[in-house]
Length: 138
Length: 138
Image (tube, rainbow over all chains, first blue to last red; front, side, top):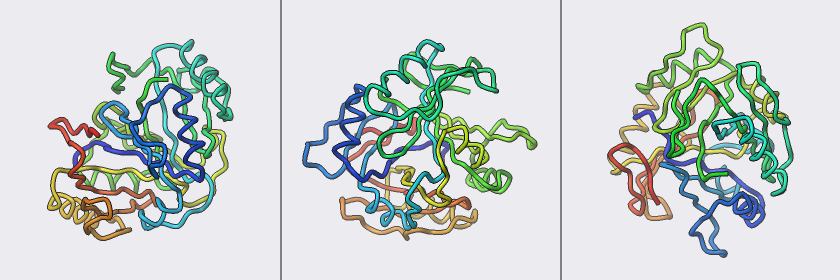
């Protein structure tokens, strides 16, 4: 198994609301309004929104109903960009899990939680490199 | 916010066991054995294993204790590769959430669940393109 991820699927209870949230952040999908899944090309990977009950059944797991141990992150090149993305998410309807501040690991980050309860850390990590194509390197 | 993901962190209760599982799949990390987080470069993204309670606190969310609506996927270029990766994961200690079979969307896939309960779909989707660098395109 190569060291890579092809697709992240977030299970959602209200697909229209979730899709509108990510579109509110400026993301675009070629899904039709009536489609039951929304795929977004995210760099060299795919990000998807799909019905949470169907995703649980398809994955062969039981749904515990809340957060289950996965957090996504979006890295940027400055503290100012962290503040800007957190504000953008707040304006798009996210709740803020942690307001932006310096972190114990020497960076600066905040967390927003999307309308379906999925958290995203927005981080500036001075030890990592964010390339012009958005790739993130250790 | 650009349309990309920098980092996926999986919360784990037993970091040594989780790390050994991914290393058993052939993945490599530059983390030291005593480090409290393991980062893996995964294409243009980073994949991390970190203590689940710390991740919940850091993300500003409550842990429901089980699966919480996120499934990862790894796409390959043939059905035979799906079978091979599922077998590799089984041998490394995964449980199988769904044995490989044809899917309702015209592909072929199976699901393994890692020792911490995080599912991975291993899929051949003939409608998508997996590039030589492992990138997956709609």
